[in-house]
Length: 130
Image (cartoon, rainbow, N blue to C red; front, top):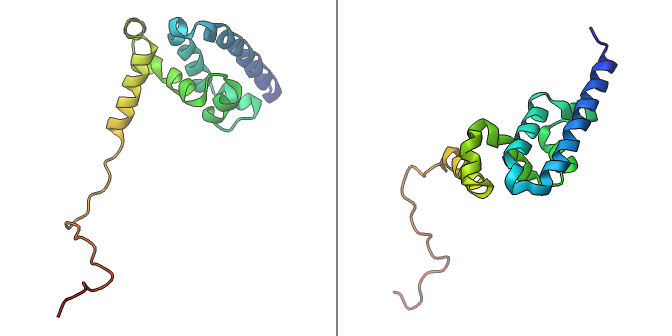
């Protein structure tokens, strides 16, 4: 069994290799977005970001991945939602719009009031009354 230090060293080496692939793939993002998503998903699932001291995947991508946090998080979701052939056929923008639509559809609806809302009463009585 490797010691904790050896395990962290191995994770850092694996993360370093993955980041090298990310840098190479992001140069042609429109074509390589699915492969980039697979790498990011692997970093997420193996919790490799913890080897660099990050407490969450979100914090890691925000600081380490030069694609923007939202883009990186969407990319990491692509391989778990789409088959590669479908993702490639539709393209990155359409896939991201689909993920956004899924997010919107799965958000809980805002609570509705139990009784209909009455219009607010005026603060002053109307002039010229009684």
